[in-house]
Amino acid sequence: MSPFAKPETLRWVGDAGGYLRLLDQTKLPTEVVEVECRDVESVWQAIRQLQVRGAPAIGLAAAYGVCLGLQSVREANDEAFGKRLEEVTRYLAGSRPTAVNLFWALERMQRVGNESRGWRSPAAWHDALLEEARVIHEQDRATCHAIGRHGAALLPDPVGVLTHCNAGGLAASEYGTALAVLFTAQDQGKRLHVFVDETRPLLQGARLTAWELVQRQIPATLICDSMAAQVMREGRVQAVITGADRIAANGDTANKIGTYSVAVLARAHDIPLYVAAPCNTFDLSLASGDGIPIEQRAAEEITQGLGRQIAPAGIGVYNPAFDVTPATHITAIITERGVIAPVTRENIQRVVGGASR
Ligand code: MRU
Image 1 (cartoon, rainbow, N blue to C red):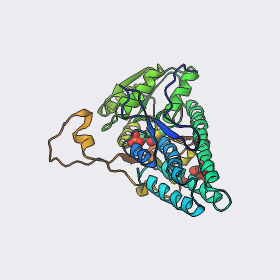
Image 2: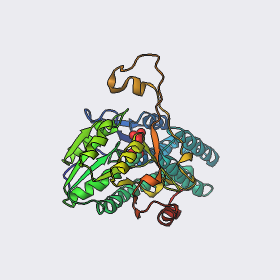
Image 3: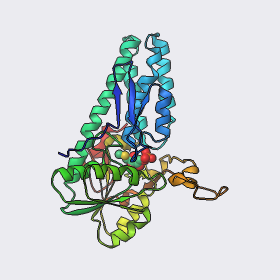
Image 4: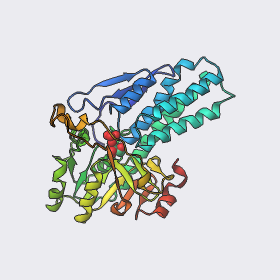
């Protein structure tokens, strides 16, 4: 095992009257700072401002956010508690649109809430919801480790791997998804060299993935997104691994903007592209990626990127936070239940089936 230890991405402190503590990802890698969320509004803000980000972590934060939002009605009557539960889940669902894990976690909280209606006191109801958030958190830990085991078996030794954005322990519990594959391969003694796309505009690769790899002492090289083709052409990459924010029933996959470009490059260089994601990242209600809502973010993330104004005022800006990689470009999807390959509607249904929402 690696001796690496970082503050937890997020954790609940105390009992049902407690609060949520988050590692502030906007401050990394230069500052390791935690923030305390003591109401549902601060969780909403933390998700929107990417203090907590990455599909599974967003879902976990939202589940705990529901608990915070219900603290004020713990001593109220059933009706007031039920009404507030509806209110806070609807509110949190508006924080970010693309990662389906957010909606999956909120639906799960609501289901547990509905099961408690009528026979539990609001206080016991609230306790049951906190317990559910903790169970979701615990299951996510186990899921990440299982994804790591299934994925590591796909990697040759030695191997050069390219990854985009951050799908590590910061984006989920402990090991993450795409990086879980690398951490597990490292634990198994495989020789890795990771190429880290910096991931414009918000640099989740340069700031977060690079930080996690340095902490774990995995040999890694940071590249600008525009350098991926050249690195592939030089024969340095034998596999591409990314995470996912939402996977449609046919395998089309939304992930951080730029993933699709990497997938096209991987295909042109005959390099396998693996998507690592838990079953709760699948949205089987969508026939294809065309139905995945793509978050649009503020123009300033581009015009004032890297901490200073880099484009003239008045320029038009397009800033989609995600793109969709067609299933045809994905060699395999690595889930906690096993590897889906080839990526077909039938294989997805067989592996994910009832596990999705
Ligand atoms: O905007 P972000 O940083 O939340 O985007 C994150 C990603 O695109 C990740 O690759 C994805 O959520 C998978 S995280 C295990």
